[in-house]
Image (cartoon, rainbow, N blue to C red; front, side, top):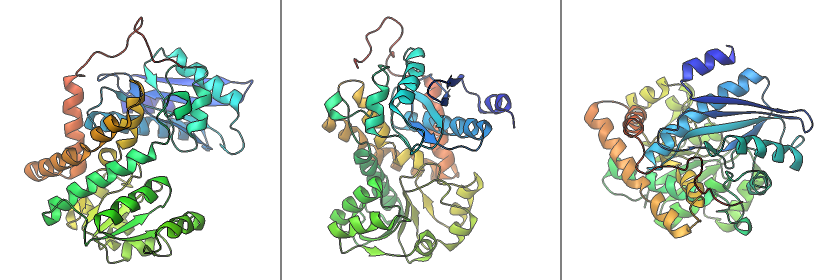
Length: 363
């Protein structure tokens, strides 16, 4: 499908194609909506097989960011950027600075941050050319690693789902399976153990599992995500790549709740219906994993960890509202979350956002 058709279908406000032959930069920045404020979303660095594949991904991701930011109560619209290339081979300071100049050219309509293939150190370089890079290092005035609050938000969403299913907002005595023990999965494990849960994990990266076991030898390990799905669990938590929930996985699941930090967990829109048909409560990923975007959004106002942490804890109440709305309206939680996000977007932001002439954050 040609990129122009994709844009028409997605209903985006603006899509920017970025090219800098001197550094090899090829990137796409997609602004889905600025109804609530400047579009906020990370920069993904990935070796897409084609420009059409990159455009399709950035449109899908930026649209999801509109819902995520709206449900998080942020005065931000949805945006995303993708850089085409192998981050291990093609990423250079010169390329990142060239990308930063494109972000700056949007004059505050897009605020970027880390995503797959980009890190805090990369945002420090991007910020050399733009005022609109967040997720920078604390030494550069930033919030640092956003996995801290991403994991907290997932935990709060899981507590709300537990209350919805079992009547108590705790995972104490429950068995939780975590697929993916990277930064978010490892931090989530700590929250769960402190709450009294039993944790079972898996990861394709055996080194990540070993690092977790050094700190928490009480954790159980299984071979892969397929085995984890078949394990007798109360909660299944995808925290690695997207599309973790396909037809095969949903049929194999023995858990009553799905709640994790991975983006785009549902392989298709129909997957949410299949989860509901099996009596499995799904806490929408773009709702519960919003702690990271809350963290980088706070950076624009002079980062305050406790302020951002307090806002992240409101994911508990937001998840509770989505699950109650789903029951009341007879729809899946995914549909309920989309409807609530659409209502907030339609109502506009609570406060004016930075426009030309206002004072932006300093580099």
